[in-house]
Image (cartoon, rainbow, N blue to C red; front, side, top):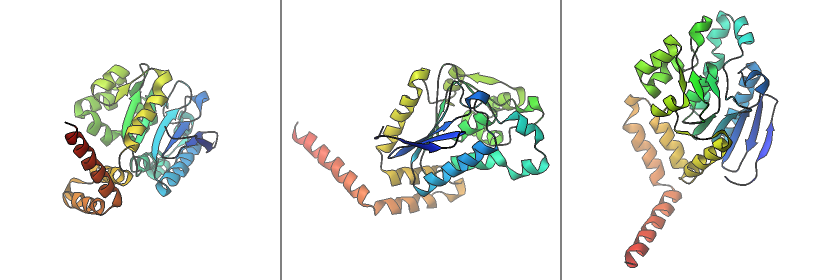
Length: 258
């Protein structure tokens, strides 16, 4: 973890700025960090900042819940036009497309919109009490903010259908077994573990990481052209020259000491 963090943001989202990363803390513990209009607006503002100055993003919930879903009181009042505006789907897609990797730190419940926020992250770390699922059909609606297509990509169609159509909620152990969670740690170690993963990512060349993420998510028809163009950009960077020179010097020293 690099240096001190500067905190700012509103009551629904606390933003902790570091040199190469930022922590977004969902801060509505009184309603289990339910995602409402105000939090969505705060997340859009936070996205704007890291789109302008790319940094790694760690997302965590205040208290013992990541996010228990959308705010049901608000959701009940939404009509057709609200659905067509894609209030949650747009912000989760924006998070998914952020230039640098995102890490979701899931303690407790990640349900409904909270689960879809987690699915939008590049990595997910949980705790033994993590529970992930999409109970939307039980409320007379569907998971329309990414789960309907993103979850099958993450865990496969059969399990995705159990979660989306039969209301299955995964335990931390189950989520880890299907690689929906990258790791499970004790709650008191959750943020520190997220920072350790961020350290590993930050040790890579930043532009290479950005382009690798963009190429990874490019449509199949864009390959191999997009790979070649991204590689062409990286081949001309000073960082590529410096890192490869350092690698060769280390190898030569090791061979000379044999």
